[in-house]
Amino acid sequence: MEVKIEPIWKAVLTDEFGKEYFAALTSFVKDEYKKGAVYPAPKNIFRAFDLCPFDKVKVVILGQDPYHGPGQANGLCFAVGEGLALPPSLQNIYKELQSDLNNQGRSLIKTGDLERWAKQGVLLLNATLTVAAKTPGSHQNKGWEEFTDAAIKALSDQREHLVFILWGNYAKQKGAHIDRSKHCVIESPHPSPFSAHSGFFGSKPFSKTNAYLQKTGQTPIDWL
Image (cartoon, rainbow, N blue to C red; front, side, top):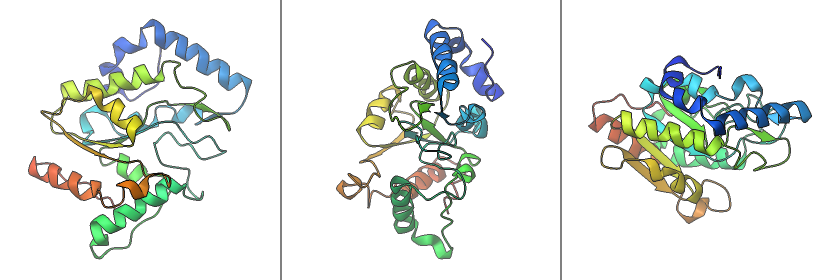
């Protein structure tokens, strides 16, 4: 099956594209796009992979579903299209970032599209890569979770010294495939307004990530 995705990822995940579940998933998603509005746009379904090739990944941030409002989903978890209001979870991520790094004497760029992180090696991966408009969770349990599990397992097995940032119980469960003996796993409650005050604020994921990257001889992420 022909899938348009970054070449190295395509090679790494080639077995997945030939599996029965992926054929069923592809058929389902194509039908959904024909029936009505689905997000993100087809060209952005694999954007997280396209902006962050397999061999360039340093950090993985796991989300659950794409946003389901017009223009919001852009293929990167927690991110939205440029010019849109920042969703509550992203607002809280920026609050923690500002507190964690104390801006390092610089102005914090509060942009909705987190492409600048992705291009530095941050894989912003949703567990489910598509969603029907105004219907959160509508494309869950159709095969995307198996596909993204395979991506996480490939990173865990074939790479070393990555940082996996798991926000919330869903992401923590998704992290079952990670070999913690050779990777750094940072866990906290989700940045949602419902849980951010239960331990997300003050968890310092950004400084912890950069400390680990530097300790393992890697260039830290310029989060600001």
